[in-house]
Image (cartoon, rainbow, N blue to C red; front, side, top):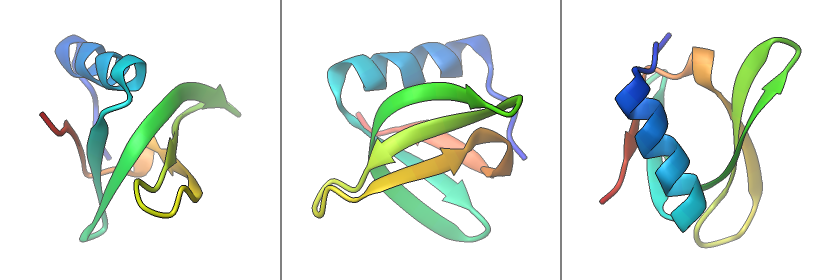
Length: 72
């Protein structure tokens, strides 16, 4: 489970505004996606994203992620 710092939230919000890619690592799997929204669902934070090639929508839970990183 990851705890995001203020700087990490700022970087994630900037990636959402710019439509840049992020890497979410969860249980040994890397998800490289384009983040679209950061939302609260049932008291949990979720990143709504799309796969950059197929456009498939994905919901990634922040509390299940091992790490989140913005691709620069």
